[in-house]
Amino acid sequence: MPTALEITKLTKRYPTGVDALKGVSLSIEDGEFFGLLGPNGAGKSTLIHCATGLAQPTSGTIEIFGNDAIHHYREARAAVGLAPQELNLDWFLTVEESLDYHGGYFGMPKRERRERVAELLDTFSLTDKRDDRTRTLSGGMKRRLILARAMLHRPRLLILDEPTAGVDVELRLELWHYVQRVNAEGTTILLTTHYLEEAEQLCNQIAFINDGEIVAQGTSAELADRYGTASLEDAYLTLVGRKELSRAHIADAGEAEGTT
Amino acid sequence: MNGKPEIGDPPHDGQARGATRRPRSGRLTPGQIRFITLVRREITRFVKIKRQTLGAPLLETFLYISVFGAALGSRIKQLHGVDYVVFIIPGLIMMAWATNAFSNNSSSILQQKFQGAIQDQLSSPASPAELLLGFSLGGFLRGMMVSSITFVVASLMIDLPVDHPFVLLAGIFLVGFFFSQLGVLVGVRAEQFDDVAFYQTFVLQPLIFLGGVFYSAALLPEPFQTLTQFNPVYYMINLVRYGFIGYSEANIALSLGFLTVATAALLAVNLRLFRSGYRLRA
Image 1 (cartoon, helix red, strand yellow):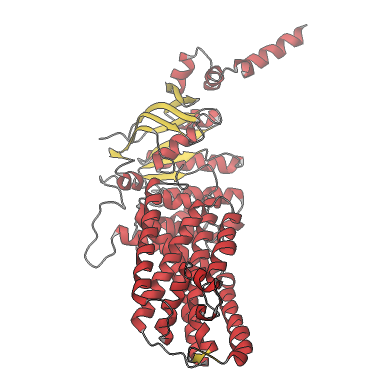
Image 2: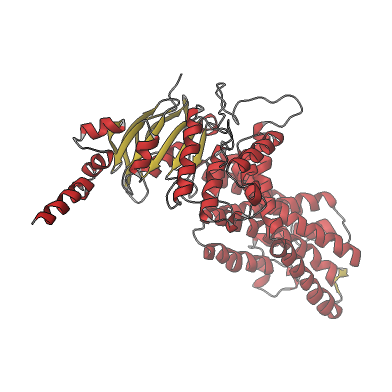
């Protein structure tokens, strides 16, 4: 069984001269729930864009279920569902059209699209909104639609780029339950997030990316161990050189102040 | 989310959809479905804003016919053996196709880049050629609709001849496709709406107006008569006018030849840009 996503020595230099990725190698096994953590500008979105054809790598290789994502992009892209960070919905389309057209772009026959769209509208509580233009949806509704769209063509690899940024607690928990179930059913998931508890809760493998390089990879416990810290958050803060922000550190300082 | 089972249900049967699966006979292939959907998206867009995309150009064309044909025409009478209004209608039909094809495609692509919505097509298995043709056909079909309605309505109102239907169809289809491609090119290159408006107002409109939609270049004084011959749109108008009324100031075979070569060259440039991902893929 080939790995879901195999990235080797991937570099990306933007025309501005910025090196967003500096030789990233990454392997995500089929069925894994993989978390990619890192500060803003670390290269998370660039990596995702390279894997989905939205950015063109400068060098290196990307294979998705054994298919070269650059030269055999049809097979590779057909296997991937992308829920991007930006709410990139088409203003001219309704909720239902957004899903239907996405299915069309992925070559799904009409009847299959109709059934799958109805199923996902129901799953994401969007049935009442099916004829609304996407522009009129609330932020939370847009986020649901983005996820439904990513799932529509039944991808084997689901890429979620900060799916819970700016959503309320209820929706965040709903999304967590949903993606966990999808993963349990066999879909491989690559998740980027700023919320460390999200990664801890959901992911069985986590990689830290910083300044265009993967600097550590393992389970949450392994990473905490490696950095000699009590939690994933502290490991992360150590990585980005901001140990002084550790909650344990702040609590200790508070207690120390209280005793004087 | 209502917690129903089997929502993910990924196809773990080896190959993913959209690439290699062969349909049963009579069914559309994934590639055909994809292409039809790309075109459907473009048609849906202009139909949803039809007042602006179909209504406005139709009104504009009929205003031209009223002002130039009816009001001025009563003074000008005949030009090269036909009524003035009949002389200008072929140019107006061509202009409608050209400007609608151009503005539709340039605006649609730029809007999708702005919204980021174009990422949905770009991250799909669609090839550069499929994407290019999908984006092109929206404007082509919108131009065809406006031109056809103008033709039908004008034919009901006046006696509009069609002397050379094959030259007319070949000429006007090439014009429509040329400006569709030009619209795509400008839309892909554009970074703000001003970029699109610039070409429309400062390049396209003057070339079309000075190409002889409303007058015969043979009647112009020098140096304007000679200058007009450097305007490519002049030959397009002549082709279409020849198709309708059989009158042309330019060599028809040469005009058709050049237009075919120019359209093919533009198509090749666009295909190269789409393959390279220029301003579409970072």
